[in-house]
Image (cartoon, rainbow, N blue to C red; front, side, top):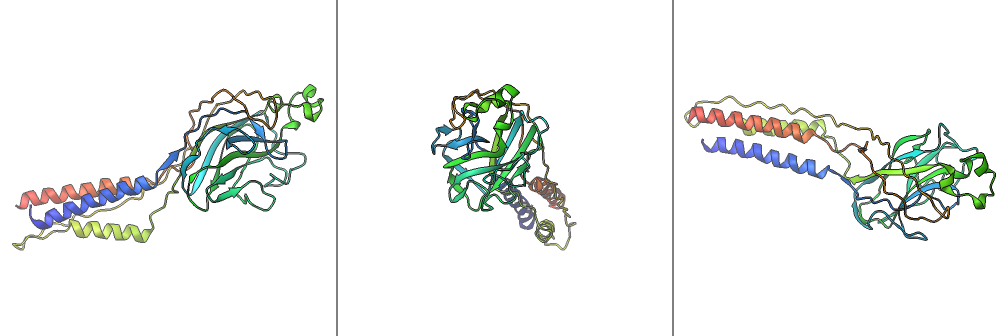
Length: 301
């Protein structure tokens, strides 16, 4: 095998290494979540909430403070007890994002990223409409990465006082318990990571040109070998919808206080894209080209 053949093979393996590095950079990470608290309510005293980490007037540490988060946080969750209800009779302005419709969003303080309500448009369009019982996913797109999560919670604008038996509704508001409303809000997974980046057509063209140039070899005696032609096929990013039948039965002595609750389990997967698979197609194609160059070299030498 002459020097030019060695160069072609080396170039092929270099591209493989770059592709693996690209896949690693786009990886999504699951944040370790250990549910131990009851459902609660927001600062308004009535809107259903699930605290994830909240030590500000609470004692909820279902995730560690030390967590590296990049670009976004996505929470997959299940809600039950609503039936087919989709809206409040009167929306609470503090947590309202879409008229009177039920919504959920992520709030808290993550590094330099802070938001707690929508009165000043803090949440923008980063919420999900709740259209009855089911599985949902909501994402907080961060302005900057961080290695600490000081506070994080899943907030809704669902007034728990509007739910429960007629006997329960007949009680004074101060005597009502959140868990007696029949509502349940269960988190199934929490994800973070770098958002997948699609390879531009120009970058793809340059990658193909480099592969073809490295694979084309010519012998010193004037004999020529056929240039190995490579074609890179962009693999489509796949999205899987989260599904879960997980529910949590919790009991609290106070609507605004969190306490121990049974741990939940889930077989759901994130419906956030879990990375771009384009690198895999590049690896397979380049290795094929490298093998072709090696075979031609063996026949000629």
